[in-house]
Length: 474
Image (cartoon, rainbow, N blue to C red; front, side, top):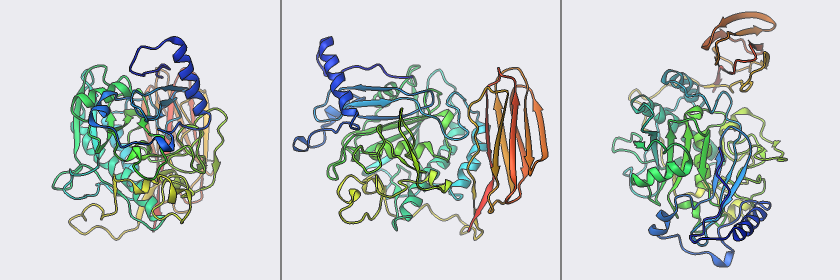
């Protein structure tokens, strides 16, 4: 899905003017995302009237699942950067943008997500839960989509906790503490609003923003993190191209929105919710040391880094797979709680300084005081992609810290049967064959073993494989 390239300047324009505007915007994009204004032209944040005038009047970083494209539009608000939407990118390991996961499947996948976040299942408190700048969690659906809020909202609370844990662990890497300033109740429980939109409300980000604003979700003191029960995008979020450290547009000049659709809810490597929210906070700027052309970074592994366009090359600088859950691999592009004097993040916009984050304590301790047992995390999911090949094999060596059972989930379409064979050190330990649908296989894993997962299916069968196992972190 892609928006049409166009110009919105508030007045009728000729085709020639539109062509000139497009040329100017694309020229700016060859140098990175265009800034909101020249240094001498900066102004105070827009008024409430301006904020509500054009719900699409912010730059957009777009993370979906179907191909590459780049579209830009001018903004109706003077001094604010062009609206840019870059096209569809691969979803996380194990995710399928087109897959509408059932509540049971979501709950199963959430177990792995929670384990990867160290078992954290609740978000932190800050102040009274409503005042000041905060992130509002929303479950949204179109009116022609079944309401699953009763089952999904509890899972959103766990996904939000895992999202926050990416900030906590990233801040700890630079000696600091950062948590998300959520909207929450007096009991500290995350507030998840449920919004029903018109039947077209889930068709695009612009439609979703319009529906939310009509429902009153338009405060400049909010980032709206929206779990949309649809299968249009993987994730999509607004991002201002503004690297100024002071009065940054990403820090509350306008209401901002991040959307994650059903197929990508609650994954860990990378966490889509954390990725989109970080866009809303202002990452990654086009003049940072390791920026990509379209709002990401080039020094992987990192929540925000990947090859986001033709010819873009990403280097693996932080090899540990856990870095796929964490921000700013080199701690020099967009997130550092104590950057060195004179460095880019000491002088430019640093999302660790966002007013939407806090450095207070975490969620309240459980009634029993918690467990002293080692933290068990889930290892990286193995994924061979969305395939129609007749056979495919994924081979991995089990980590030395493995502790427990490997779970492999194969989901497939079509009427033909699919087959999954699991080998450990070349010994066949599981062989399952089943007609259309999904099946789950569990096998004990031994540290250091070479595990092969081999899928066989008819070429008309589309399938996706996800596998993971727990590892101990002391």
